[in-house]
Image (cartoon, rainbow, N blue to C red; front, top):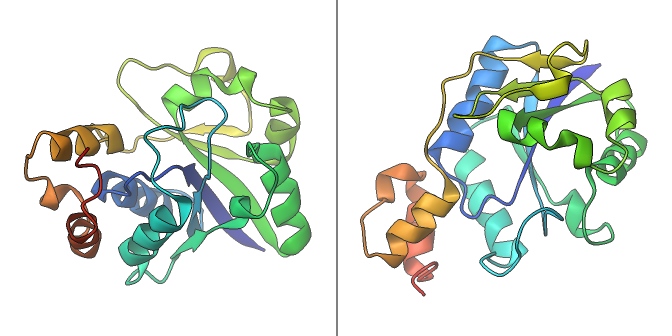
Length: 192
């Protein structure tokens, strides 16, 4: 069974930090591939600054096109909104019974994991690979057998930093894959 890491996010926009973390998970864990699952709307986040899902999916496809073990998924576009991870996992497991799905998440998300719908069920059936974030800790989940805390480099690049920098007319082209940066510029994204 192929071990597939699901890296959920808005990817608004996808950036080199996302790719570096995915690459770390492939190289330093037992994952065989990483899927970037573009979330139409995270129930715990504001929706207003979100680009249309198709633009975010397209940018993710541009970002991973030269990586054979990275894929993009629009599975949540087809599910009812807001998207809950448990529903996505059930759907993916039905669709791909020969894959063993794990989650990839930041320590900050793990801190709020108890707020997720059916989080106990997720923990029972899936491994969660956690990457460090500054000023975050694992809380109650630190000793759970399905939680694997990795030593991935701390990524301080964020999509919100990139959006704000573009709004402030700063050059952040090196923070995104070249084709993504070109598309963001061509479409005038995040300028207002």
